[in-house]
Length: 235
Image 1 (cartoon, rainbow, N blue to C red):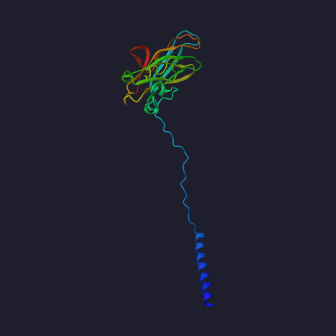
Image 2: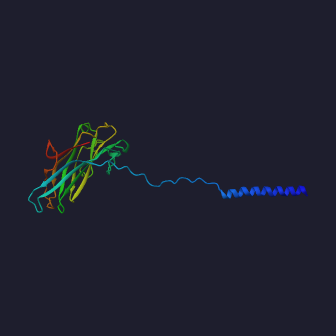
Image 3: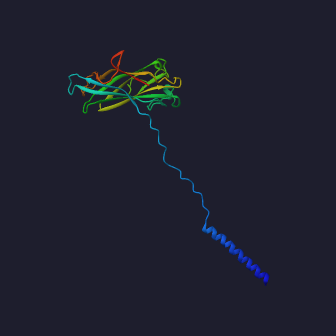
């Protein structure tokens, strides 16, 4: 009887002690580590440096036409050099031998603004010159190009001249891209001159009578070898 009582007492004591541990676990449950929340906010895209105004010119078409004389302003902004191909609908790798990873470009915005209600246009030849152009490593690609211009007509040689048309609305911007490939030196996009020549108004208030624009004011820069044209240094 005594051994049995002792055995029962031992079992009861063990159960009580075991129960205490169980109660302790209930009172203080183990803490499960919580993973840090994963941010779903996209990383902000770096804002490219702003363009720099490099030329402002006031234009006049003083012909005696209905709605005339016509006036407008031309603003030229130059962007910093950017890595990669310009955003144009051109098959650069196939037509020009230019690849995204080894190409740089400098964008030049040309904005023409006329008075509200006027219907005028600036038609002009545009070209780029400089030592790197002479060396054949700088190409010119105009967003609103002449349909007769075929980029990289001579194999992978990029053009250095084109034609553009601005206007028919109150403010129109066209971008010209100066482009260099992998063989160009680091400073190829510096010391360049963009020239706008033979500035004409082929619309003239809807008359359809083509005539010249005259530069009449503003801190414009004339071209020494193209009277009536505008030249500006970029890069």
